[in-house]
Image (cartoon, rainbow, N blue to C red; front, top):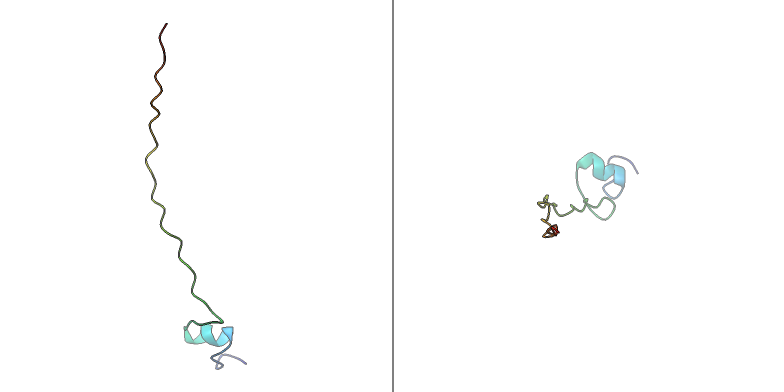
Length: 46
């Protein structure tokens, strides 16, 4: 159970492969910066 063992995490890291023991990171959806919403309130002048 070392670098040569394909089923262990260390073996996966050594070989650069993925699997059940070393799943790929799920990429979060890219959040685009939304423009600030314009508020439609008008000040009432008396």
